Amino acid sequence: MMASTVASGIHGTKKDRFSCEDNATSMLAARLLNATRLSDGALIALKIVRHSNNPEEVEISKFLTSEPLQSDTSNHCVPIYDTVLVPDDDDIVIMVMPLLRKYISPAFHTVGEAIECFRQILEGLQFMHKNLVAHRDCMNLNIMMDANNLYVYPFHPVDHHMKRDFSGYAHFKTRTERPPKYYFIDFGLSHRYVSIDNALDLPVWGGDKQVPEFRNYDCPHNPFPTDVFYIGHAIKEDFLDVLKRFETIWGALSKWKLRSRVVDSDESTLEQIFGTVWNWARQLEFVVRRLSAHPWPAS
Image 1 (cartoon, one colour):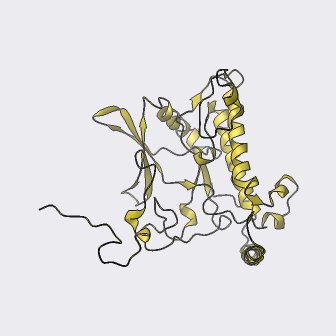
Image 2 (image 1 turned 180 degrees about the horizontal axis):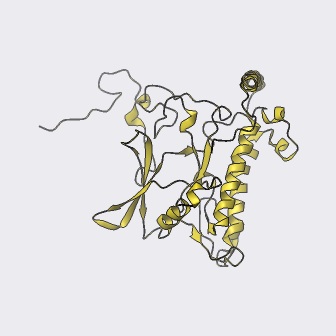
């Protein structure tokens, strides 16, 4: 007799199906799965790569995370723990990586936290370019964060707002208390060149459709400046267009300015007052605990 499976939240239970784990789905499930590493119980990600679609992805990913590059503190390329071949399909390789999440979630609380994020992103881009690799698709969706240190209890691999066992919301510390590290992912369109100055290639259609080079799609361009545009546009979209107070970034910032709160552009006056009081109460605690206004992660 075959066992039947009944979905949560139906057949007589009053439980909301949206609060059940089997309702959590991912649009990336066809090529990105989560798994648990047996040695330490850590959550990891398994990415399916087809050589026929992205012939250089595995090679470049392994190059950027192999020694001595792996030990370079300016390296912000997602580590590759292992690669697994599929016995009955020579076109597929499974890359084993850490489980990351969007770099803007959970929210930034201070200007100093955001500046540290920018520093790491630019440092990582410079590292790739120094090693003659153009990412060619480093838009905001391909910038991620190792947030495991932020969470009191591990977050769920699909619904990041929930605990790993889906028993409730996942509570987290601020980036000031537990500074995270940011990573670039997805090297499917990347290429390694002989030099930066003489690198010419036809533009590749990445996730950000605002790239100026796309206007002359049939003309070869140097992809390294295009990477810089991607990063600038990501910061503009995720910070300058969405959040207030970032005009102060370009000036001289005191420690207290760095501790000032990041404010959503659509916050009401009451929300701003409450948020400001809450932020400075936390910041005074951080000052007493001698936590830096510029939260660098441990190397």
